[in-house]
Image (tube, rainbow, N blue to C red):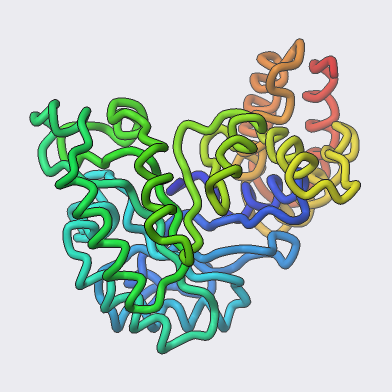
Amino acid sequence: MMDWTDRHCRFFLRGFSPRVLLYTEMITAAAIVHGDSARLLHFSEDERPLALQLGGSDPALLASAARAGVDSGYDEINLNCGCPSDRVHAGAFGACLMLRPERVAECVAAMRSAVSLPVTVKMRIGVVAEAGHRADVASFSEQDYARLRQFTSTVAQAGCEHFIVHARKAVLGGLSPRENREVPPLRFDVVQRLKREFPRLWIGVNGGLRTAAQSEAALLWADGVMLGREVYHRPAVLSELHQHVFNDGWRGPELAGMLERMASYAEREVAAGERVASITRHMLGLCAGQPGARRYRQFLSEGARALGVGAPAAAQVRQLMREAAGHCTP
């Protein structure tokens, strides 16, 4: 979820559930070690529990980045071995790492030695090197499963006990990130088989989960579920899941309460120099499925662009959110 689940997005999503584990967007280990780590790792305590998702393939850099994550207060360190984008592939990390299980094991071992937090891995069920091999994309052979089993076993022996598996193959080259989420077929049966073979490992599933009911069905055999863009576009699904899975008496937020929470947050952030649109762009799904949702999105987007930054904008952001929400009918 690069460029999506930034700290403003995570603060917003936390309002829908106090217990779900949120993940940062993928941040490269090199950027943390050699760049502005304070800015990259900054987050609000209200976002926790929160996992730091790292990209990289250099064990030493990943270990240093993991230590920085610990120092910043994160609750988990996650290594991304599932992103198939060309930009990530060119950097020799993401999904292409599934072709190098020994290197991933070295990375996990280095991070495990450097930090006491859980070190987890996000992965796919397999990798296809060229998009032209359509048959390889659509099928899943015993040879494919043998490679998946070897990857899992090798990385687990290095100390990883927690895997989140996107139940699709990743295609390196020829497919856009969106196509990589849609063209390779979902194979939940493969993840189920993996869980049966490695019962002592925590294995969660990701991909194609749209509703609380689908997620609950997956939890009958998986240790956890991960939702991405569905939560971004329809964040209320987090509240639905929380109520069904945790059953702790918590209820999802009312629209008015969520707006007040985000208005107070936006006032602080915009007064400190953030653009209004940097915050409100993550709130466009707040009224998803309700009458007037389209007008709400339009009004909020246009109004945020007009306000800009600084104290004058901060003084007007609460009114903007209230007027935008006035177009929705719960």
